[in-house]
Length: 506
Image (cartoon, rainbow, N blue to C red; front, top):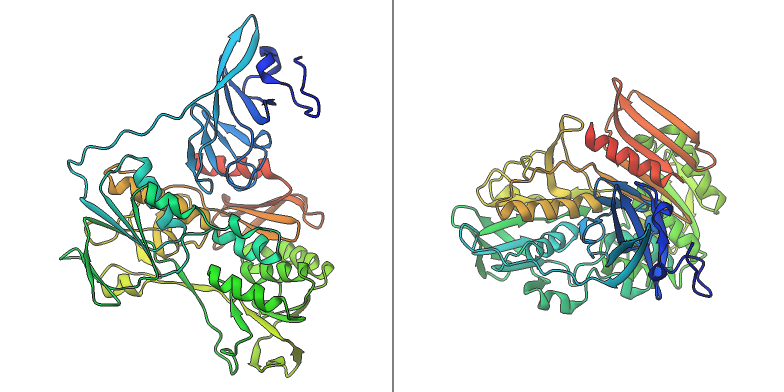
């Protein structure tokens, strides 16, 4: 066993470690200087990579090795063991790698390796320009992927948002609760887009697309041509239709601007009503409780999340929030809002100086529909994310694609799915013909606990539970006619990763 540095309980890998201490398929964490390094063995090969996920810093030693990749235990990012390359979101940054030297049944970690730049693609057969409409997860991932794949042509990223692309999931979680610093929210520094020659245009709205002429028109009347087009327009929040819904103290939570406004309002508010027991609604409720507001949740549901996760998990979520002081008003709806309260359909009045509406979103498909693209509760795409129009692709919340796991066309509103679709769409624009068949994944954070969901089950006839739901340590398998469709888990990170792999191979 090698010696460790004072104050560091892991071995100093520059001094060597016995090869036998790294089991085949296993991992050993150590350090090189001040950097945490993970040794991973595959047969006779041993790899040395950064030990923490470049997304939120999860310990990769708790993750899962799959073939020549390693997957993050928290949010299922995937990295190459050979070169540290970030292969699948939510992580967008590669891991560092170190050179390995093996001698006399010992393995030593040597110098940190320099990444090999991606060669530029020859322009023959590629579109002269690629325009992306939408600056969310799908659009940003697509723009980055085009450059990572070596595309040298014009990349124009159009966003109606006034802020550069940001980490949307953190808004309703750690940023709203006050546990995330503002500099953590942007996906990239503004200089990144300049360095990558990505023409990022903020605060612009596209009003129409002409697929035949391959042009689009902006709100100000200007036109722009494209060689290939990716639609990643995302989703829009459903607005509450009751008297008082437009009062200044009533807030939505979709954009960074929305979140900033909500944080400012919460700084002086004392009593909040959250309308809707959706993921966004309950995450907002948890975040605002952590800011010590009185929080009431109003929803028509019998139990929160019951429709998506079943009654037992719904009961656990309800108990979790009640234990943190949230008061629920279920099987009812708001009838009116005034400056001091929310009136329910039952006639009950709840005092409120802050109201948050989280009653769902709708795919932003008006632009695609007006352009004559095939629509069915989303923009219809094939397995390569191509729409019904030549050279137009769609990704993210608007895309309804043929899912081989369920055998149906599905559309999901998950951040990780949007980013992964953005990557696949970008590669297919470059002629890769890569099928999108990733298993959907999302996570939902409530106080200091997280729920992981792998797969997609709109309907099921059986739920099998391993563990204790009430103890927040379980794996719930949702199946239909004996076929596993989705897995929900808490406190079982590696089991969630294994379930993802099993669904990929099914």
